[in-house]
Length: 117
Length: 115
Image 1 (cartoon, rainbow over the protein chains, first blue to last red):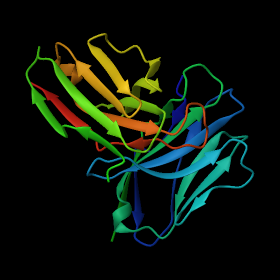
Image 2 (cartoon, chains in turn yellow, cyan):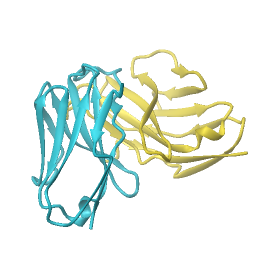
Image 3 (cartoon, rainbow over the protein chains, first blue to last red):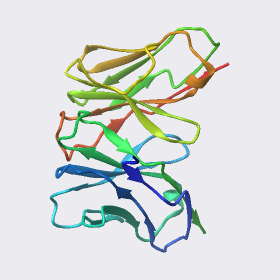
Image 4 (cartoon, rainbow over the protein chains, first blue to last red):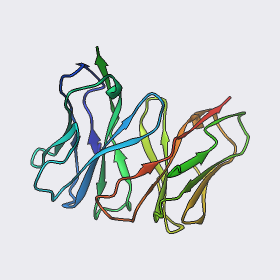
């Protein structure tokens, strides 16, 4: 079964507007961490933001915030005030605490974001 | 200083050859990984090492053999390369096994093309 689902293969957003990238996850582990990474066309993987399963508040990092809805098992990334440099592939990932498999990050299929000027 | 560095960045080779990709991290992390990103951009873990010990082997063909001479290095050797091995291979490291809030730091990737 898919652990991480990103249902939007591609998204467009107008420069300076906000955009939400969807991510749902599947785990029976009570302890897990959720991550978002950005992969620009140059190919490197850039860590953006982290949310722990026990965190009471939604994570924020500058223009990035994570809309964490635990009961729905969703961890959507919100990018505010989009910039042209935000155009990239975005990956949602999860690390489980106690399930077998060690410390691996499991990634979703990614969403390509294009920011229009 | 590059935190996680892997070499080479590009590798073009013929089917049947044997090749290696090297990875080094200077972050003092205990855990290192190899991920494969296919042509559809899907990232899948291949191996994970913690303090030089193999922790994860995700049903990767045994033509792929990781080697960790010390906890700062995790190299990937591939024997008898096949066309389907063409992909981008990422090395990554993270602080400690089973520490939830530690992100993985990725190298810049090695684009392997088998012809």
